[in-house]
Length: 568
Image (cartoon, rainbow, N blue to C red; front, side, top):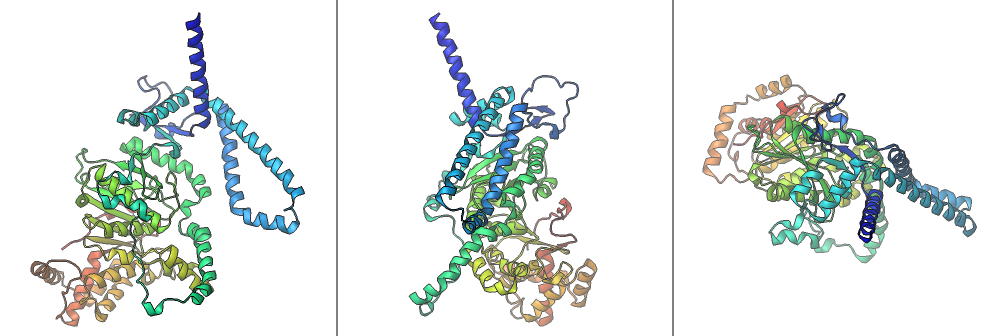
């Protein structure tokens, strides 16, 4: 009798323990299918009405969990709206005289009552999960993985898609053997390019610093309030909430159709980075041995972003989300972006087993910042491909802000949001390809039809000026600008014909120079060349480094347009 009572007590304790885990547990979105069958229930034959479509693998909560989850989700949205509107609400309450003890006490009571109600709703949601065998199996696997992070438990856990905050860390930035790398946590992050230090005579006095203090405070407030959200709208919670069904569908496609492996990386600043890896090395694909790291745009996510282009081309692919995007934590300031990219490259090398010489970095739009940072910091990378990217953020920021804000915008961008792509790209010695959209409405400074104002042109000119300074004289730059102003292939060919570009001659000049020199940029080729020769060589180089694609900024790039950069 005593043994039976002890057994019942253990069962009660276990049941209450599971109930507590269900109350505190993460939201479960999907149970992935493998070969047409859901991870839960695999082993049974497909029943009538079952489908192999990945869109049917959503987790099916019971009625109690479903309704309480909806209530808590709406409360979360309302709380976010209240957070952003709180300064206006506080100002209104102050003007109306509501900020007094007699007014605040009832508001505090209402707030506490609401908190108790929400706690009760959360308990009811946990009760609904507790009665669902699917969730019980999931929470048991999650708890087992937290206690024993072995590959077998990780593999079972990967069959579920749930709130990524509860996903265990798969790779840490300090797992590498480099001592210099392990010091990053003490220095605040990886190194970035800084503006040139001012001369001693130009240092501001104490009085001048005091005069500039209000402007510096304003810049800080602008950058950390609406500035960062305008630059990275994908980090806004309400937008992510609206895109959630699409993101879940994209994750299911990567996992179920491409056998993708999701992982959480811990960067040196403490941010957790959400990644997805598709391995093609054993698939027999010609390009499978090469890894393409994809850097998304300012409202892009790996679930639905540029990752599809190298996937269709047969490459192994590693996608990741910016800090503050979807499953990644933090905020997307340049330092955090570089820290995240560093963790991604380290993960690719030390955990996935790729050599730097087999890694290609592919970026779309604002992702060019992290791509160029990686190219600058890891010079042995195989190649860099920048699609619809730009040279510097300041001209684009000035385009969308009032002219009277020019000084504030320039100062704020340079101090807090300095995306200096061209400066970083010029530090890289390897192959580079720039893809320009001929109808780009985002990175043009006038209108989409004015292709000459596309900032991708300036990125190309900066790169050529750095690598071939003797070729890019005033005459050479003029010829390249004329070619960049052409909006169709026919117009581009007309410019090349006008300057009489002989490709065989240009190639022989470059090959001869490389054979006689070390090949490190900048090259001195063109030093004693005629003006006509420089113009021919400048145009030849321009068409090798830049490829035009007739599309708008957000049009997906087809696999046929994804080509390896030219190299001599």
